[in-house]
Length: 496
Image (cartoon, rainbow, N blue to C red; front, side, top):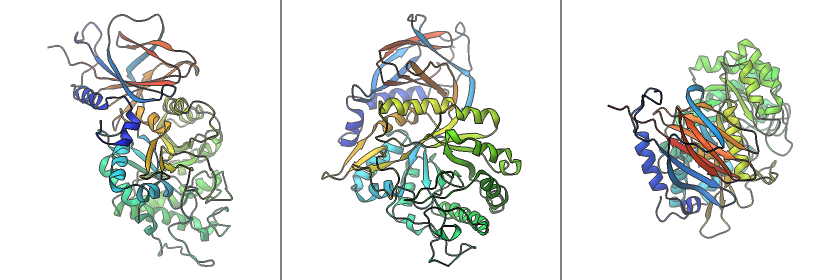
């Protein structure tokens, strides 16, 4: 618990997070063991720490009494966890520090408020340990103004990127990124352009258009310069995507169309070789668009020369269903999948926490290595924005209509916390059974220290009793509708 911090009192409400952290610290330092049959294991009961959130009860990250595994179980659904069956490694959970988000955090919060917010968002011990930020390379729809890193007057070009500069980002974006990295050194940065400089495009502007043929090679240099400049500023870049939402050409904020064939050519002939020749290790993630358009990444990854440079697919949630990720995995099992954008907004008519948890559970069960929402912070009017979505919400709301400014965590904060707070760098998804939507949904992970994390959502309309089964032992629990619980336990030490 963080004394005298209004922000965390809002989040935790009645919860005693300090007790939970102490319990988790004890669990986290339990020695790793090999898997044993129930008969050969120590009889020391395994403690299960439980944190629950309920939208209906307005509870967020509420610590529940710990459970223990035993031999009895309820006549109810059973979630079976098997850590001998492993799936994808998880890179993390997070959002985007857009220009709008960074400006609000920098300009609308006092220094103590800003430090408290960043600690709450990124510190793995004192906060919820967010571990991915997807950064627009230049302006997106959530920015104070339209800009790129090489803006010129009409008629000018700069194919060698001699005028390239990230100075716009140095004011408040990079300082906040560096503060966040200091709090969580495992934080991964993904760079995505909404538009390259206008002189590279058929429209001559950041709005609309496509890439002119002569700009393919300069755009690759643009990416190289971006990675190098960010790394020189203390912000290493984990991955990039060639183009945000390449099949969407907005008319009121930066964007650019790029076909699958164009992206294949760009990765194969320009971006991949440029990264290779410059010694850049940042991953290249293709596509960066919706579930219902996976013929695009299929085309790119079917190009063996382009695929040789691509680590996998970045994907969004705004069309289709999450099972498209499994279709991609089945076709390209050696390539990763990262969910890189999904924004909450007023178009959502259901229960917000439940919908966010369904995304986290569904995405990771369908091979996502990340779940990244959209704006990290927006204000009380969903601003600042250039165009596009006018009802998107941030992970937190910075309400500067009050004096002093209020920081309000949203349902997305709670949902991310149920995963990011309890998973460590290098965690892998493990086997757990789940049930249909409208029932119990689950996903499970194993941390590098051997601890097990199970997330269970009751997406049904009635309270749901259930069992957790692990290595021949059981624990029972009851979850209210639209509620989510995270369970964490560590295998006991060997008996001597």
